[in-house]
Image (cartoon, rainbow, N blue to C red):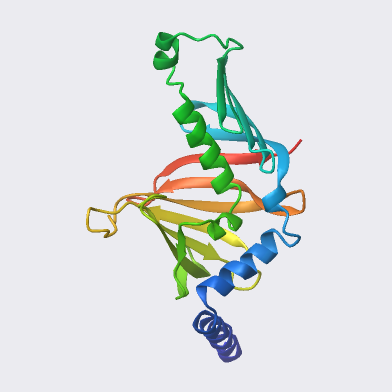
Length: 241
């Protein structure tokens, strides 16, 4: 028992020293090296499927195409018998609903379809599935102070990230495995008019399993929860076949 306690002290002591010695920018570089060791993200061109599961709702299947060099993005989402398709090709937007492209303003409005929504999906998928590499983007402000935190019984190195006002007002925290530097959790909070965190706002996302696409290690399962009460929101499952 004494030996076990001694080992725990040594392990946590080493992790504490790592947190003290590593800067935020170095932690990010180490995580990027783990997830994208061959620097493939900037030239990423690929396709994958995402199954979204939500309580009391039918599953939604989204087929995503991202081609960063050609500035091309497409998402085809299927839920029940409804199929929506958004395409952004070098900024040009096109929308279809169940195969129909000549949609009236009334049809667009009643189905909540718009080019603004297409851009939102592009930003959403390229951001989340491009992490942690996307934290190198312009307008992203990395805290150089790395924290050591326990989250759901596991120790993490935590990176605080804020954004220029033009990018967003949310405050994000990224949780990294202290041994592999894999990104395993992220969390965001809304802020008030003074820039202070609203404690009961936002969500946290737990990442499990990994898929490798074009040599990039991408989290396979993302389970979303509300910060305010830990209640479950949804799960996204990445599929490559």
